[in-house]
Length: 127
Image (cartoon, rainbow, N blue to C red; front, side, top):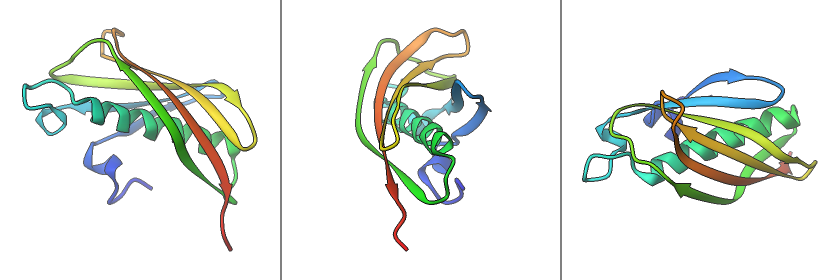
């Protein structure tokens, strides 16, 4: 599913899937750094949207719909230079059409790096 996508480029992996959340991780390496050597906020948001969209897809449990992010906001509260960041997407609202996700980005010591809110929409696949 991730082959030849941004997820492959950023080395994003799914770590855990439960009924309550989806957890993913991404390595923090120079390819996701800002010029000054810290994790780029855009890479953080890409991780969050990936994991939140995956959670939405699993929630819908249907091969008859596609998921799209329609709004995302992020607050970056701490920087990181190396290691891994983890994105944990938990549902705030599980609607049939729209879903709202709380996504916490943390480091390996569980320090909060970013807090992200994602709204997704489930659309029917076109035949």
